[in-house]
Length: 81
Image 1: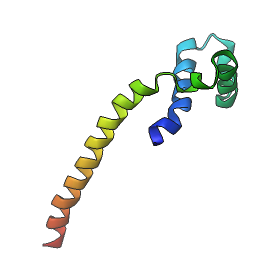
Image 2 (image 1 turned 30 degrees about the horizontal axis):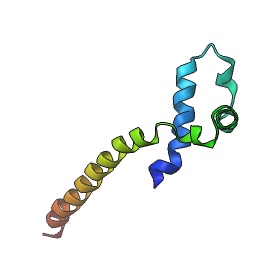
Image 3 (image 1 turned 90 degrees about the horizontal axis):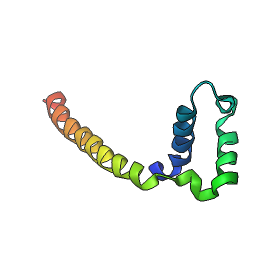
Image 4 (image 1 turned 45 degrees about the horizontal axis):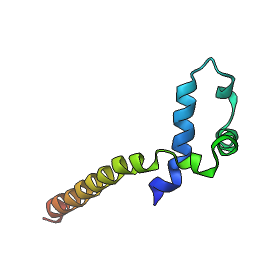
């Protein structure tokens, strides 16, 4: 859910990185960029690339949570004894 909610901000970040420092768009804030994307591409433009992003995030979160739980078990046993 968090990945889907933050996708519009990731889209804005990626677009700002793509235009480079020479563009006048670099001085616009995130919400101004979002407004421009909605005007040009519609609301779904803010979620462009969402499926690809989730394909990256879901395994990464699964690995992170698994490592956290494993570490909790291992270090929990060490500190309890």
